[in-house]
Amino acid sequence: MGPGPSDVHPRVLTAMSRPLVGHLDPEFVQIMDEIKEMAKLTFCTRNELTFVVSAPGSAGMETTMVNLLEPGDEAIICIHGVFGNRMADIAERCGARVIRVEAPWGQPIDPQMISKALATSKPKLVSIVHAETSTGVLQPLEEISGMVHAGGALFVVDAVTSYTGTELLVDEWGIDAIYSGTQKCLSAPPGLSPVSFSTRAVEVLNNRQHKVQSWFLDLSLVKDYWAGAKRTYHHTAPVSALYALHEAYRLVLEEGLENRWARHRQNHILLRDGLQTMGFEFLVDEPYRLPMLNAVKVPAGIDDVKVRTILLNDYNIEIGGGLGQFAGNVWRIGIMGESCTPTHVNTLLSALKEITNL
Ligand code: PLP
Image (cartoon, rainbow, N blue to C red):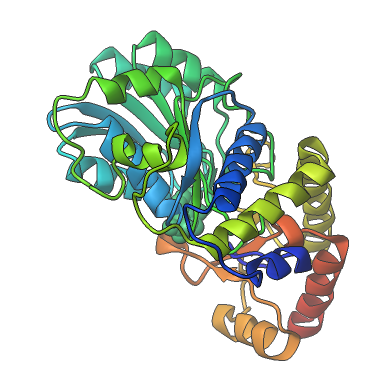
């Protein structure tokens, strides 16, 4: 019950233990095709260039940046926590001039700040984190998307934590490039990153002046393995992890995407009410709170590390500590995917009550 990985369904574990086939075996290619279709359904997109990077969420982040940015480009990067900072770092490594738009940790980015930045720059892209796992903030996206397109830029979104846990409509919201991870609300093992690129983004890729600086993440090469008419070797795909993701996607679609979003919301309310009854305060204002990652202030007189150690050793429950400026004074409680049940919530609340006497 930390910020991920979340629990994994037994069907996903069973899928991982299936015998291996080759990464170009026709049966495996069929599984890859089904994964792409399920990725499109869950991103709510028709984007043809939708597939899974063979590495964790940070590689999805890097894939969007290294493919869309070239030396000398401008990029507006929104920063309201750890992961916005990581995007800015990667964009700079691509040789881009980064314009930072920042909000205090625990608050969303104000769209007016982006509008101001757009008025004085000509960025290739504007990038933002939908669910900031370091702070528990859910960033509204639609208004910002309109501004970004009016400014002629691409809209890039980090959906590592929000994907399949709260509403996320890639086509309707005009998102041009998006990446996620598998270890959060999807409840698959870590190590893969579903990504999707709009036709506008693909045009930008096709018109690049320089080679992409990363061979492994260069979409012009990897797409022939995932999407080419004749599949050709690019790298040896992590076959077992993709079996697991295939099964995790099937579970998501059996539940129904909207039902899954609603389940995360309902269990968030159960957790919120229980924590507030014990006197916990949330870090983030109600309208911007993530359902799947609950950031609460550690109450005065409570020893952060001691309580989390007892939870782990005596109750077998992991919750996350604060990151960066929140280290020591914030807890991050994840209710993601298979870890998002009333049993998980009630067990944690009882354990916290016993340990803290709150
Ligand atoms: N972006 C966000 C919002 C995240 O929460 C994380 C990881 O927690 C990442 C990016 C990086 O993902 P990974 O750790 O899978 O590389």
